Image (tube, rainbow, N blue to C red; front, top):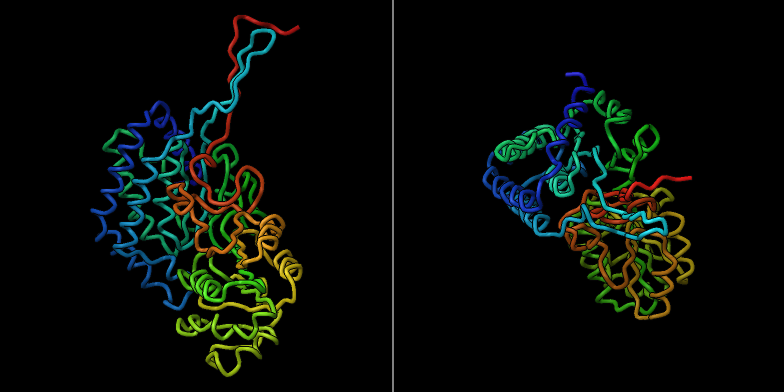
Length: 415
């Protein structure tokens, strides 16, 4: 099939979303959650076919992997989305002009949303549930790494849509080839916005080559700053959780910035990391502080390229600073504006950090692992936007809407 035919089919399918009640939408999402769990065996078989083609040492392996627990969690998130308020149709502003015109600003769907993503089959379910809830068409371009998984997931979604008499191509899965990517990047008139989810290389490629408007998401070069006054036990827990909870996701710690006043405490702070087999690239002061206490095979001198790197694995850098200002300078230079945290007991330093750091999510005494749509009460997310136009941070239902002006009158004409 010519790629244009996929886009035309998706655009036509969008008409079947018009007029659906919130009750119909939510009932379908609940049914799909049950269907996903019921299809666990089938989904895991397809996923295993993808996993068999990937090296388990690949940083994307964990993102690609589905388990029964992960499918149950995906289903739970769909049920949460079903229970959330649908923002479509909300009146954001309303006024009557002196000439009698009644003007309203009303939330509407973005339209046809294209998603380019890598080895993340959960995205297929997440994107559909959020787009369907808000009346948007989802045009999906998954990577070849997850081709079997995505096909199996879309098959489940299509079966539920068909049972409800809705055109199944409101979620359209493009072929997993480069030609489909090129077509999507140039789908003017068919795609209203394009959202890439994946590595910095993928996001850069989409931004530089797309003729369709792009919302940048995903790439996270994440820092935790341990201030001089930090509670050492708290700091150790936050660094450990931020680094090891799921090393392959975008909210994972990449560089621990430590105040020099805590260098003597560094062996204690990093002890849990050693048990988790985390490789550390430490600058000179941190390396000296850890030498003899941290496993030698896991401790290496930091090179310039280790700062500003999104590791997506059990690796991280440590940078030593002498002040909050120096920490802020480092973050300003290397941050991808995703998630940044300070651990401190100094209220002034906390407020300075939160007000100064330019990122989608900033934290005080909290692990960066919380940058997630479900954790922010959004049900799930279509991505973590790292830009400032239209949406920033986890993109939930409201971020999948635009607005239009509705003007009512009684025969008015303009001079």
